[in-house]
Length: 573
Image 1: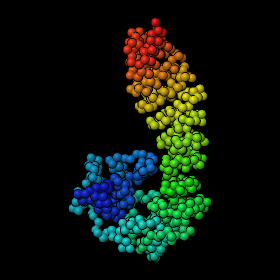
Image 2: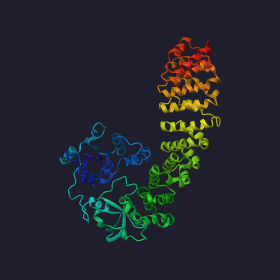
Image 3: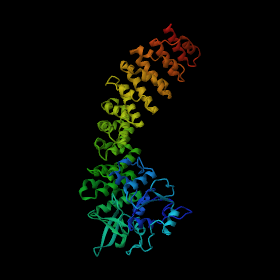
Image 4: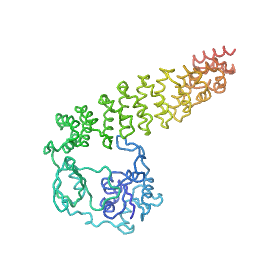
């Protein structure tokens, strides 16, 4: 048994090199389904469906037992992390350590990957024809079924014509006819099945699911929506959903509104998944039915969330990004999902984030849920929650103050965005209620030397805010704050001078201990820093040479700085 890893573009003939020979798709299918080799897609993952072979997601799943390493999918279907092509080969070699050989066929040069033989498609095809690789190309008859269709592509062409079909097929020596919908299983078998391509169908009403191979298919025809009757609810939802996606304006508004309104009321007798798919399509494509579609979506979400349920909430987020008001009536449901560690949490928190940005008042009741989500294990959920809390704190700092502990914990995150937004929310609370809680000075000091300048700026700025009510606490960290006077970011230096100025009254000695840094800061490029430093020198009687202050008094370009220098001189004389 060989492990064969195929790229798609400029490699397989579904997208061949414009001037070179490509590997026939039939060869890939033959080796996967007839010859018993392990055949995997390592490039463009469209090949997974085209050749009915496993790909990168399945390799991660088989290695780890789950796909958590890939993180969340964005609105375009891309994961947060994706292994480099070399790593994809290493994973396959790890999964099949006893293989006879490992062959990668790719237009990218992978010859440097240990243990793998690399070929460009055109060289690979020639080696196979010459019998030099231990792989045989399939005879032309090997893949030709003896049923009513010539190939898998012929079946796929029919499946493109609609969503509900009349299928006639052979099973157990009998010929049967069903009204069916076609579907792909949520998780295909890890080991490729032997034989011609198989297609999965579900009888209308959802009472039976089965697969049929090409030789068994006698006839397959699409069925128009007009032929569907009320009892065939699953097929009806599927047909209307297909129509909404392909030609939204053609779907009658009354029909659509009625189906979406009735589905939640009779969920036990309808195909929940198909009704949910229809609601998702209407949310996206039909503004006139959006409200009822959103209501239906929440009513149809399953108690045990599936990938489809999570996708439904993600679809609501996409819509809320343009029109957040569609979710205002569902804050309670979103809060319930956001507060629980489940597949719903990230998508629900993201919806609340969109609402908080557009209308902070609308999510006030969800602050406890956002507080819980702010300490979630997944970075995405935490990021959405903290940003939402920072939006609410902008207008309603008192309502967010109970979440201070969660925000302080989030401030320690390794994610710059989470840190920045947590600091922003804490800053709003501290500015309005500086004496309302124990100041998080210790925690702020730990991020004063963060790599991200926004984090440093916000942290030292917040210390300046806290110094108004808690100067004695803040001045204990005069050394760390004064170090920001040498920051390469001007705003951090300005904030540091302000924090020292406000806290200095509690301990002039602590300010005097920073004499060297204060003298250097007299030459800072920021007039605000220079002015604050002059005030610090005068207030704390720092023994700065008078001639340095005289130089500033006479020659500084900023009038305020000159006045402050003159005042400092008068204090030191």
